[in-house]
Length: 126
Picture 1 (spheres, one colour):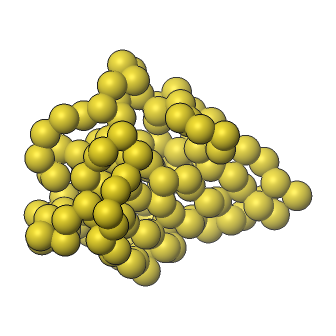
Picture 2: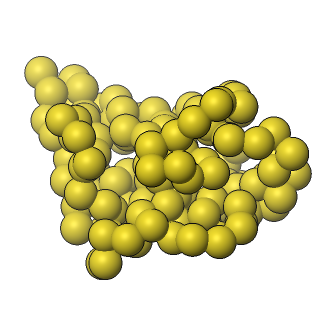
Picture 3: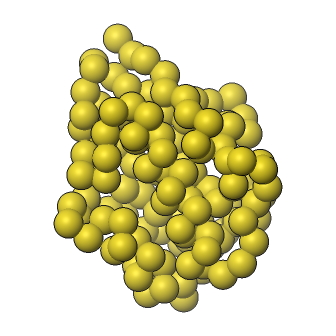
């Protein structure tokens, strides 16, 4: 049993996928979120901090649309174009996940959709 999640507070999918899927009524799988402004549909240009902030806010908008919050996130996977951005990314990330620290993996990749610097996906328990 699964239910798709959609919110206008996160970017519309740019491919054949859902923003999020709730399975068995409790597990939320959030698709990778990149720094697209959901109001304009435009990429957020700028440094890793600006891009990370937008990607995390998009991710949390999907979590909130499913009835959760940052506290419900149990696993995060971060894809960075450049591992040199790791420390600066962490400063932004910690602002959103300071009290609930989900399990996390950070991976450097060779390319991301639309050439962005960061993509973030998550699993939450509602």
